[in-house]
Length: 246
Ligand code: BV8
Image (cartoon, rainbow, N blue to C red; front, side):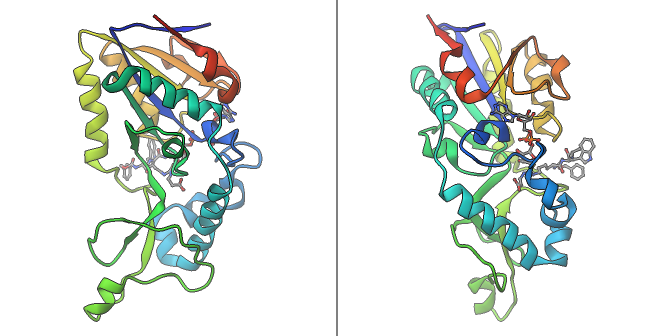
């Protein structure tokens, strides 16, 4: 099955852990998934961080180390190629924090759950800053807080469960959908279990604007019924031949 794209088509893509799986990055919910060994509440919530920042930094430091040692795969490349052909008629939103889309050349990209390679402070409102440090012993502290005689624990600049998403990032998605009214809008989800909100609701948001909804996934996900077309298979193999350019 091919996804036809012509000059009047706008393409909104949502990716999840399944796209990075073929680069060797463990997904969250498959058999050997990340959450299997680390209950979400302990490593992916603010409460879990406050209870044990050392454990959480070990979890994220291990993910930073892993992500540094893998490379984008053909699925990432196919999406970067689609962007280069479509320009501002294309937008890629990812739930992934591993930075692989950026490394594959994607620019029109919204990292809705933040980035593994950025760090922010729980004690002050400083901007998240680039950081690929691995902290296995004492959790890192904010030097700006220290200069004001305060203690500020640094944290991974990712969106944890129970935390709201950055409205600026989400506005980019809703305005892309709004700008698509009157054109042919295609929504393509790739490699996501459709369990985590608000990402899992994006297909309905796009369909409410008249989108044609496509899904590429290894297994039928929770929200399969929301899609018009489902192409079952590994994203690294399915994505490169999927688009039919006219
Ligand atoms: C929020 C960053 C407002 C950190 C992540 C009840 C109902 C609805 C919502 C809720 C609810 N209770 C609580 C909520 C809200 C909650 C939520 O959705 N919980 C779920 C679990 C029910 N959401 C939130 O808290 C969000 N904030 O809503 O704010 C609010 C505030 C307070 C209270 C209520 C509302 C914040 C969510 C963000 C959490 N952060 N990540 C980090 O990465 O460490 S989520 C995390 O899961 C990752 O980002 C991951 O990407 C994401 C989703 O998982 P997937 O990407 O889908 O990965 P998964 O492993 O699940 O699936 C992989 C899929 O790929 C599978 O289907 C598999 O078959 C497929 N696959 C595998 N290999 C391949 C493949 N496909 C193709 N090719 C392959 N090779």
